[in-house]
Length: 115
Image (cartoon, rainbow, N blue to C red; front, top):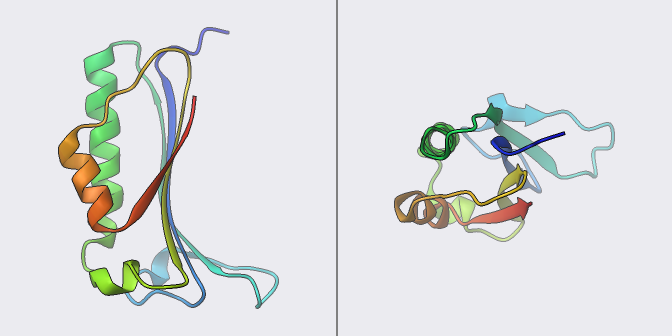
């Protein structure tokens, strides 16, 4: 299968306790000792055109980050909180602009890439 142009992106905030303002994105766990996972979104992009694909990914990341905008930065940078953007893509390369990288850094996000 030719997977050029296929991207999956997921944005989560994992914390020891619910993060105020992200409760609507919380996922229930069977074990109360488990951390709270706030799933702020997932997107699948299938776009062979590199510019259109980059634009679609940027737009999706902006939506994810907008959902966390109102959370105080000290909370997202605090101990016991892990912010992650996970991106999986096929053959080739993918562009994420410096503007988006700065926004991700502002919320203390770790970027996980599976290529």
